[in-house]
Each structure stands twice: as C-alpha cells, then as structure tokens.
Image (cartoon, rainbow, N blue to C red):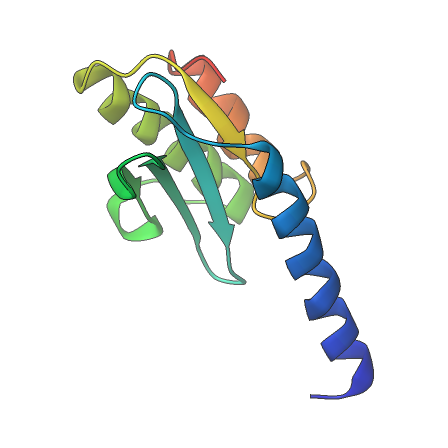
Length: 118
C-alpha cells in the first residue's frame, strides 16, 4: 500500500468516525448502516443499545439484474419490506463514510419508497 492509498483509507475512517459520532440507533429508531464494496452492497438495521443487527440484506438476497445502482436500489427496497414486516417504521441513516451519491443514495431513496422513514 503506497502513501496515497494509506491517506485515502485514513480519510475514509475519519469520515466514518465523524458520522458515527452523531448517529445512534435506539430500539425505537434503528440505525440503517451501509457498507459498499467494489462488487456488493450490504445494508443493516442495527440497535446500538443492544449491539445487535436486527435485519440485514446483501447482494445475494436481491434477485435484481442490471447495474450496481439498480441492484442497490432493489436492496434498499427489500430492506424496507423486511423492516415493515418486523414492525419497524423509522431509521437513522448511516452512510458509513461514503458520499451520499450513487449506490448509497439509491439504496436510501429506495428504502424511503418502500415505506421506511429515514
């Protein structure tokens, strides 16, 4: 890993910590966490009081075909459907140090369309 890669990774960790310092998921309003890799996207609803993941969705559960943004939107919609079944209506959005753009934005907006209040 060269100096530029180390600096970029360090900057992302600082952004993630800054975002997480302001967000806390309770049992009334869970934290919707997004992790994005080059190939996939992972969404979780987390109760930080208990330290447990309540609902999670990954790329393998989504039956959508197309580009990564479409798949991310389908994952957000699937997460919202699972949350509604569990009686969860509200969440706090944790973008995980990523910009609110592209796949992260598509997942959040699809979750809103699915009935989850973020």
